[in-house]
Image (cartoon, rainbow, N blue to C red; front, side, top):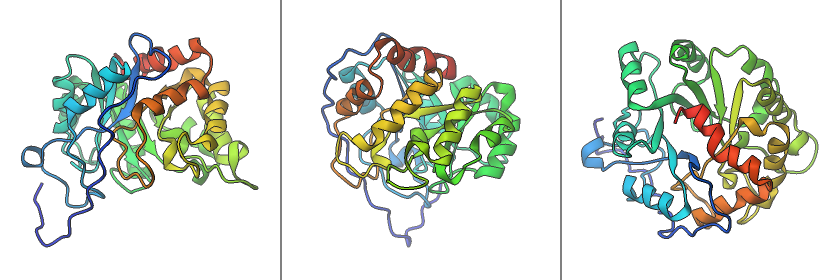
Length: 298
């Protein structure tokens, strides 16, 4: 990636809190953090000129230290727009993790089959399309790419606002591979018609989960919450998902919580929220261990 010295640098994000506290409940053996980002040194990996932010100086060792403090055994690292479609950062992180990590790539639509094969062998299990920030392939290109990666057993991961897709279940039924929806579909916790757990898009997401074609991540409530930590206005959405399709849920910390507009949460506090969202221990175990084992092939 070349650097344009005349273009202003995007702002540097605040760093995550250095000491993640252990949650009040013990994570089960094999617990998986199914959504996080890792970054590499700029001198080695470069930064994309069109990135939205400059990452804080935290790296793979910091991410694994958080895992050790909180109790995670495994994780899924999602390529960020910081490094664009140069996926060396996540490939190297997986290689250095001694089997603890899997990855989700950012891809160009014209990626070669041979490159897809290399990424698959490295531990990548899907690609991401960010429809909110317009990072990575967008929907039509993602559909075409999905048809190509289906042979690998990959899924397409989407960051989207689910209320923009009131017919999402029908879209998912015709999609060429499995789909994973980030952050519970970024639901709108506002009051009134067309909002809340009965909003059309959110109900369509639930139907899609129940069809067995789609997964979603219980993660990043702060992205759409209008409340302070612990983001209680997102609890009804998480509970609705857990009641309707617990077998299609995974949990993610969204570490290192980039582009935070409010107070930086302690990652351990975010993990502890899972016990509020999913009080049943057996269901929590499946969300943390069995579901990600199936989805990411640990």
